[in-house]
Image 1 (cartoon, rainbow, N blue to C red):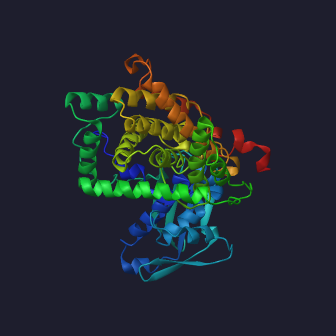
Image 2: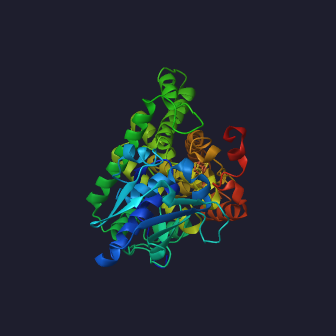
Image 3: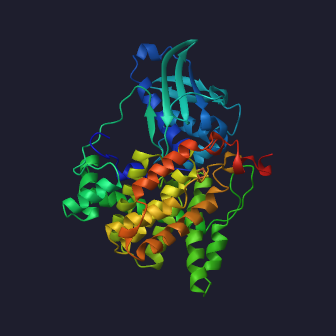
Length: 455
Ligand code: SF4
């Protein structure tokens, strides 16, 4: 981060299949990267390869089955990419335990079976919880081996490889204090600053950025629409019934304003979260587990509050800036800091976005982001059975409501009198996450994950 935060908006908001950015999207990308690396080997060498072996560690091992990590890895090895993958194909992978898949390494084909993916639940000393090692073998000889870390939100790192180069941001900041300083120093509107940085980092023009933001909004709306019109039971052994459609059908007939507002917001956020749990296309915001908060609010603001497309686009860039700061100074991974880094950060992003589209100044935007995150501190990640369903789906609805409330709380009084700033709450989140026992960080060993439902 020498040059300041250099993450793109489109690295935070990514299209991909549910249910988990760190357990589905990250491993799929790692597997795709491995195949590309293998293809750099000389053709004669490649021809000797007879096996690809994948070992999953940490939370990938303990909750990977529930999250479909094995399917995601295989899809990546087969050449699928998160943004364009066929979710029906993905859901059907490995359903037949004896099926043999053919992986293509150029013209050379290698057989791949379910047993080629090893869930190694032992304690490990890798620097990141979610680690996977992929090896290309010829007999007992390892021809290529790579260690990948899935670090949350679908971001991956490959041991020993530099992060891909990005453009250098025009305005360099490392935290919220730095961002506010720049806005004041250059007397520049927040979104103008963020757009200039986005152009520099991604190399896209303003029109191209806007087109991509419109696509994100469309995919978000689409996932809400699917969710509020789909009933039934979600995949997995819990047998959880979808609830968003019933919530929505009841909400549209409500006459009491408060109940109607809350019910609609709940319905829209849960709709996306249910679509995520079903393994369908969603947008990481900032993760898949927390994918319902921002789209739920966007859908509400657009369709029930008349907020323009332009303001929504701008609001998304403001929300992304909150995620940049959280990611660079703490983490957005449930396996690293618990759910405070997923739903907590999503609510914080959403609170900043709501404040922005309501025309609030920078200090209110910061205060709203701070308040929303502050009230998620200490929140564990312990999904029942390792499935992103309980508590995740309802937690998205609660996160959306908290975000709206944080905006209201920040809008009254003088935000300059706010005693805790956003950077301090980010630091507190990191400290809390470090102090949290690993049982409560997506390992399926404690908390709700140990409840009677899981046997
Ligand atoms: S409990 Fe929170 S952090 Fe954990 S999987 Fe669910 S949404 Fe993500």
